[in-house]
Length: 216
Image 1 (cartoon, rainbow, N blue to C red):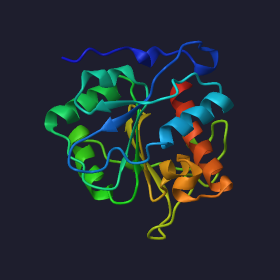
Image 2: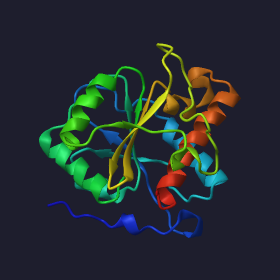
Image 3: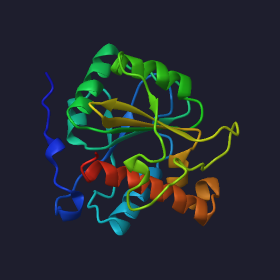
Image 4: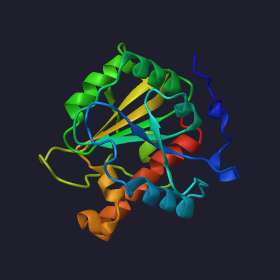
């Protein structure tokens, strides 16, 4: 059995002097889990500067099936392609999320069908639910009255936020048709405007704030 580290009792981040790490999720299946390498470092820099977090500057990398996953209050997953969780990995991820962890999955265009199938292994009896714009995650330090912002346009579909809830607690946020983490990258990567990047970083900051500030 994995050792569960009780970061679920983290104090509110605004009062904490501790330093925490967050991580990128490494998964199997051939998808590029390593996409957007500058995204999390830029988001960390933004949140440390603007909302008072004290997160280590460089994110770690953690594998889905590793017991080390329990060291992180926030794990970010992205990519463009295939995702495969073994049943053991799915069980590990489920235990992590039920213990108080949080997974943000950002479809970087192309992983949607794969992720939706694999998350069923993690929570076979819980469906992804669309998250409305009045949810707390859109109403932290930065307000998003229209919900998830659109950062890049691919199929001209609206951006949508979906979630997995356990006992009314959001444990997994899935951002779709937004390319949110593309907006966190260095400006020369996608040539996004300052306005677009700021919008993305503010939404990312809200996610971090929601997690570190007691969630619900």
